Length: 387
Image (cartoon, rainbow, N blue to C red):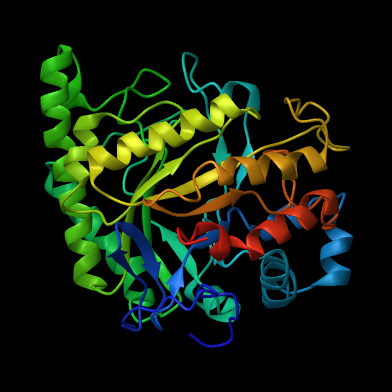
C-alpha cells in the first residue's frame, strides 16, 4: 500500500502480507490484516457524497474551495479522514430524503428514504489512494426502501442479475490493494419488511416453517451472489449484508451466511447511555457466536440539534456530547476479541439525514472532531489485549 500512513498498529504486530486485505485469528483474537501484513482495525466514515455541497445554500463553498470532484476527494475527503484518524472510506452513498422520525422506528408504517443512486467509481478510489469498501445491491429489500422488490432467489433471472452485478463492479476492483471487500444489502428485510412485504416463499408459513424456509432462501441468496463475486474477484473479503442490529437478525439467516461470508456486518445505533451500549455489545457477541464470524459495526452514529436541523433532538445536547458518546459507544466493544472496527455516520450534514461531522458549509464541528481524532489515533493501543 502506497501513500497511507495510518495503517497497521503501533505495537509492531505483523502477519504474512498477501497484497490484499484478509483475516487472521491469533491468540483467540480476530484481526484484519492489511496488504503488507500489518494488523488493521477499520475506522471508516460513511456517506461521503459531493452532492451535500451543491445545495443553493452552499454551492459557492464547493465552487471556491474545490471546483472539481478529484480536488474534493484529495483535499476534502482524504485530508479530513487522515486528520481525524479515520483510515477507511466507508459506504459512499447518502441518505437524501424521507421522514427521519419514522425512519428511526423501523416498525409499523411504510417508509421510503431516498438514497443517492451512485457511489464512487474505481477512478475515484484510485485518486483517494486509501482503504475502501464497496456495496452490491443484491436485492432491493432495505427496510428504508418503501417499495421493496423481493426477487425470486431460485430463478435464473436472479442468477443472471448477480452475475451482471459482480461483472460490472468487481471486475474493475479485483486487483486493488486498497479494497477491503464487498458489503451486500444495507439493512435487508430478512425479518418481515417495515412495510409488511416479504419474500413470496415465506408468506403464510407458521414460525417453525418460516425459519426453515428462510434458511433455504438465505442460503440460495448468499450462494448465488458470492459465487459470482469470487469468479470476478477472488482476492477480497465478502463483508455480507449490513444487518439492522436494532431490529434483530434471524438465527436462520446467520446460519445460512456462514459458509459464504467472511465478516458479520451490523448497523447499530445506540442511545447515549450505558445500558444501550451494553445491549449493543451483548447483541453483537451473541450474533458473533451464532454466525461464527468476526464483527464490523458497518454503520453507527448520533446526532444533536443544529442550526440547519433543529428537529434533530436526542439525549445529546451538543457536539461535545456527541464526541463523548462516540468514544463511550466504541469503547464498549473495542476490546472484544471478535471486533474488527467501525464505520461512522456521516460526513457532511445535509437536509435529508440531518447530521454529520462537518456542518452544511463544510466546516468541521471541532467540539466533535477534536476528541474523536484523539480517540481514533489511539485505536491500536486501546484494542490490544496486552495493554
